[in-house]
Image (cartoon, rainbow, N blue to C red; front, side, top):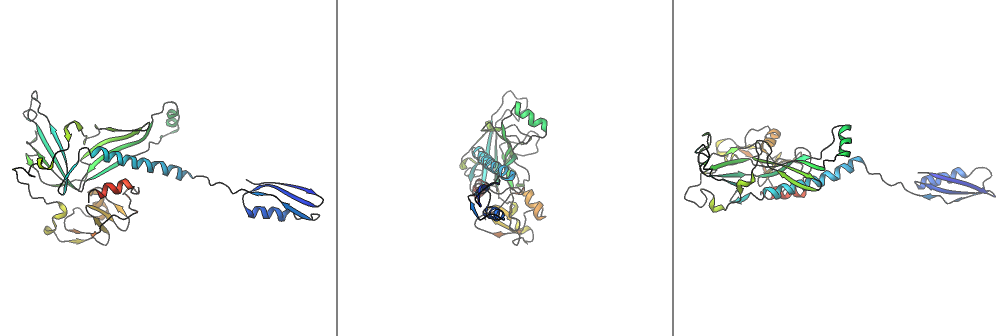
Length: 319
């Protein structure tokens, strides 16, 4: 803000007030040198304007913190159930027998092991934004307290399942079933922060997760791993190079352990469908990448969000 006062006494012009720059101070002095003025006493104070925070800066700081908080909460929750053996991650569930069940399928206990390759724990959510002026007004009188709302999921590029008995519909048989590519989350729970406290909602959607039946198991308890049952030969999509001609994608795509990213766009892929959509491929068979030893800085997710320290820790844990 510029405010200048001029007083003249015996031909001497005295300048007081404030301006925002040295240039304005000099300009005021030169303008005071008019006919009849024998000298100028320039006592103007220069006060540089304070930088005003932009709307973008105010908005960006808070979501970045909440996104990282959400990722850490997701990792904390899912690591209660995930255990690592050999080259795979596992989740184990035990459904107790129900003697009162009408079907013989439920009157026996059921053990299920989910074996996963290239496991990724990810979050999907945002800060709720009032949709209209009415919503904003209602929020003032009846606050919901919701600071972040979304989901936390477990995904993998390849998965196979072990069942201790055939399923009721006969679609999945007892024992280890074949490996398959998985484009959707294997498990998903709701994740939200309300009034400063994070909470989990396990009853979300078709991939709902009932933690009462899930717990960590020991590696020697896995069927075919230290037991009398032989382990079926593992053949993940990435290892089937002998069945198809090798395709060299190393100019564009790099691989660090089990993580693939686009070197040109610096986009990291957390689900097979993301890589397939970016590369135009429909299978991992016979693909060759630029193999690196560590993930570079500056990577981002497909939605444009830059990886946080928590994201890097989560991805590096799988390598």
